[in-house]
Length: 195
Image 1 (cartoon, one colour):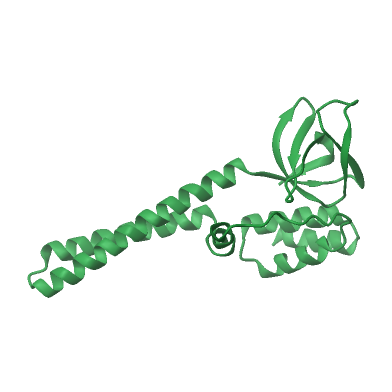
Image 2 (cartoon, rainbow, N blue to C red):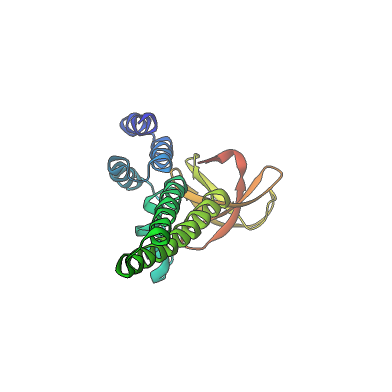
């Protein structure tokens, strides 16, 4: 709520980069916050850069639209609940006397176990993705992106305040960034604020 309210305040002050940064922070903590999502869309309309994302595969769309709705902590809780359910169903199968009950408990325990494995894999991948993906927001009105981490390297494109980038690497006071459309370049570290 604090990040969401900070985003609203910065938006009303017409400070786009801090507004986008705070909406993104609010969504990191609660990906289901619809108000923050809607306000982020409105704030992004005020940025100058129009970056078209690369086309996504069916699995990437499914991952983004459904699996990433929950954080890895939520998936971990789902995994723990499924492990308890699978254990209880297996114990019920073990102590059941009638063949029909044994069959029912065995089938449901196997299904629960398979769901447990799936949720464990999702939790692991979400955790790795969250830890390995470093996103940042450009906080300078206009910045030149270079092809190498040096002052006298060639400028390859220009970015503006409020643009979201992925940080791939850092060398001294330079950061290697990647845009949603696949472009890669180097910028000074001080112009970014990492999420």
